Length: 171
Image (tube, rainbow, N blue to C red; front, top):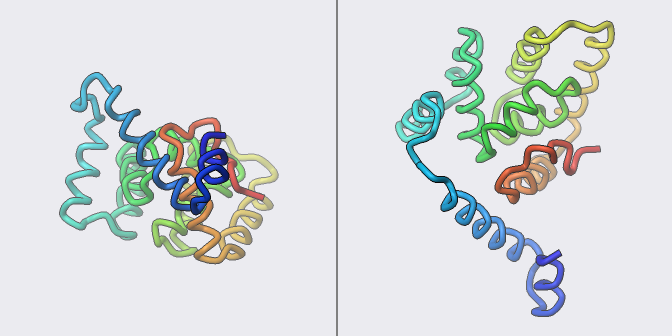
């Protein structure tokens, strides 16, 4: 990849090059957006709440419990720096592993993650494996160090549109 060539040929730090390429790709991707005002109302509200410092754990859970999934997704996207469509995909993913990492990165505690996971599963059909999947997701939530969580989420952030790469870095 381009990153590997730059790191090798120029003898630069891999992490620094990844961050620079990510920022460049995001700027390029945003500049191709025909109308910056095409953001959803949920995204606009999440941006306003974030600017006022009002996106905390309680607010995120309150919005979810009130059933405003688009605003919840926009708030979690804003809190994590991930694309909204990516957050939506991990919200509905049945394993919950990526959602666990996003919640950890957003400084949401284990109980909050469990509530979010349960709401996401409630919006889909229940399966006989849901208890086992919840247990696995909670174990995964607990097993990762803050550094591991940051590496995973920063990798997701490094792609301007990570949909389709939701399991990148998960084991």
